[in-house]
Amino acid sequence: MRNIILLGALILLAQGSASAQQTLSTNGQSLQGTWLSYIALPGGELTLFSVGTFYPGGSYTGATTNPTHTTHHGVWLRVGDRKFAFTSTFFVRDERGVFTSIVKARGSLTLSEDQNSYEGTVERVIMDTTGKELEVISGIRSRSVRMEVELQRNPPPE
Image 1 (spheres, rainbow, N blue to C red):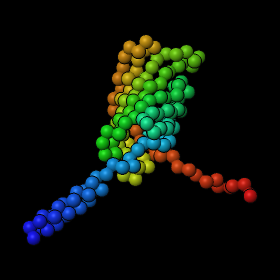
Image 2 (image 1 turned 180 degrees about the vertical axis):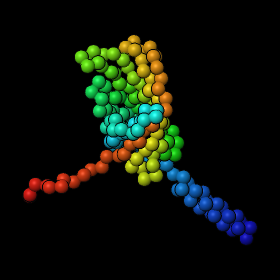
Image 3 (image 1 turned 60 degrees about the horizontal axis):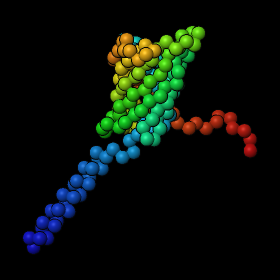
Image 4 (image 1 turned 60 degrees about the vertical axis):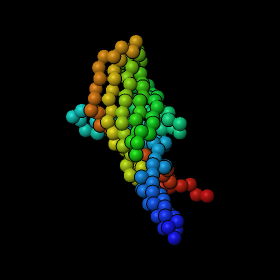
């Protein structure tokens, strides 16, 4: 009888643990996909900044609305429940196309519960062309929305 009671208690504990694990599960949480990103420099309003893709395995590429920036290349990593860290780098050119500086962005992101948007903070490290750090801009806010497939409004007749 005692063994039956212990077995019953173990089963109840196992079910409780499984239930707690389901509630706290981070399965499926990923930035993988393409996102439209808006940023706000300290004290500024959010404005469209880039479209970028987070790839499986932790790499990233993106293009900005600023014609003086090269393509952004970077890496990302999940660091907690709906929490991510990333680092990306791009080069800056002047209006004549001459390479003038390097920018590294470091950030932390929090994925929304529906996994279709995220908010975060970014820090930009501005360097000269040799990589010497010139300035750090902290407190940049970001908000991004996941791109979804859209069907044509006026598809061609079949």
